[in-house]
Length: 91
Image (cartoon, rainbow, N blue to C red; front, side, top):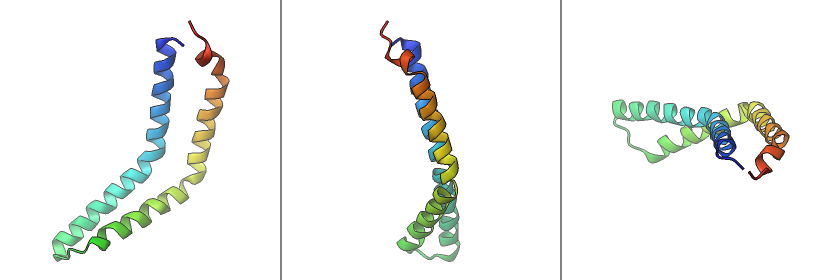
């Protein structure tokens, strides 16, 4: 397997993983920021107040985006299998 082929494979793998993870991570980060702002304004420091809304928001985003996530993974897998000969070629 050539270096260019290996780099292309690594790049496409990382980009696909980033595309799939980004919505959930951004949602958790935004909800965490809003909860922290709320806690600062109200001086309410309860640990369960931070983790439960973040978990619910991330799970909701993952459930809503599940068809898109599965389609993205299916496209990646199909592209990987269609180029399997190029990846397995030693040269």
